[in-house]
Figure 1 (cartoon, rainbow, N blue to C red):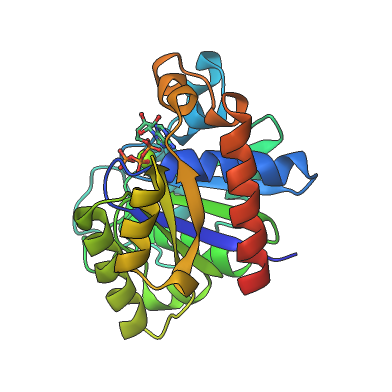
Figure 2: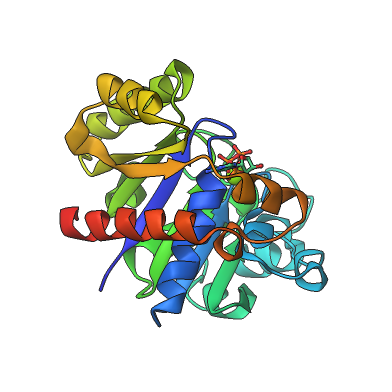
Length: 259
Ligand SMILES: Nc1ncnc2c1ncn2[C@@H]1O[C@H](COP(=O)(O)OP(=O)(O)OP(=O)(O)O)[C@@H](O)[C@H]1O
Ligand SMILES: [Mg+2]
């Protein structure tokens, strides 16, 4: 099965929680899963349940100065010098990922792959690596992103099988969904869905369905005290609440039917 999913949405809605639970579910089914932390403020390792000995040692790819220099043939710290714009990346996922609980994790660091930001060796390497993951890598790829899809270039975004925008029952995060949807449609992408998180009651569900098309909604994740406190005690939400895991399994099923 081919599945490349990118999870986005407003700050704090539950992107990392969903990415972590989804990754753990695929891993539990025996799939090769590559979870990609593409948030400049990375914390997917913790949500996946990686132990502190591993998380403390994770260096994001964009901060691996020697790797960046070696692959782009650039001089660290030198500005305006020539460098290679087509660096070798295909061995990076295997060599630099960390694995735990059957999930392999790659922490990208600050990603600006849209080409609008600085044209520097770090960005060139991350851009090439992101396209490689989405267009060539054979694993299930689950990408935890910051809000928006601007930082993905058009070609790279086309490699995503499904964009999931996480919303909460509130206008602000739904506004973010509408913004992302417009951006996606502008570059010809239609596979964009919503997961509504932190649902407390029927009223919340109705609120979401009043504001987005039911066909666009993959499902609901209810507010869970256990998931909320898992963050406080540094446990994976996957290991904290069976009901949340069941809800995400249903979302996954719907996703696989719709893609
Ligand atoms: N269903 C839920 N029930 C209770 N708490 C939740 C739920 N989903 C997420 N949370 C809590 O909300 C907080 C934010 O969740 P999370 O880190 O997954 O969001 P995010 O969208 O990745 O945030 P950021 O934008 O900072 O990356 C965390 O403390 C998390 O435990
Ligand atoms: Mg997050």
